[in-house]
Image 1 (cartoon, rainbow, N blue to C red):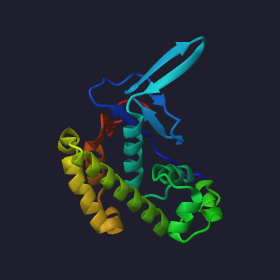
Image 2: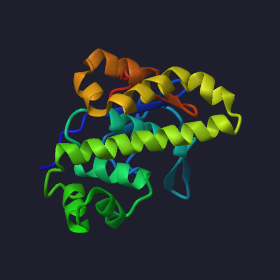
Image 3: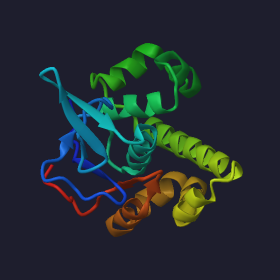
Image 4: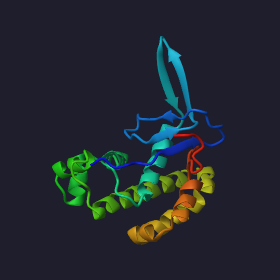
Length: 195
């Protein structure tokens, strides 16, 4: 029952894209590609990869997954749960489920009901808002200035929750995703590299 997940391509602001994107599986997802923001080097015959600002990259991935209107694959649900730093049992308790049910969703043995998926997505967006507000309160105005339009969009999203997502046009979703940055990471909507 594995979902067909479209590629998510990310690039670091200010860096030129590479010709061959890095298929970045370390995040636990099969569909994440980096077209910049990483360094690969060979040491003693083994290839090592270092990713710049990996925490910001994970925030961008969570942001992107939170805006999807299709059914999420189990690995995407797992990524969002881990982004919230919750165990399967903790998520089950919050959603009135059993740990076994959460595990079945994450292993694609059972589809997650739409309402549970939306609740998880809204919870992640709420956490993202708290994170951004904390950065602004700590004086990171550079982040606020770069992200200000998206903050307004996120606030609007949280107020309208699923109604806004379900009614949004594909072009609006691309605009929101395409203009968002976290740290130095940006979602690539022009598919800068063939993923």
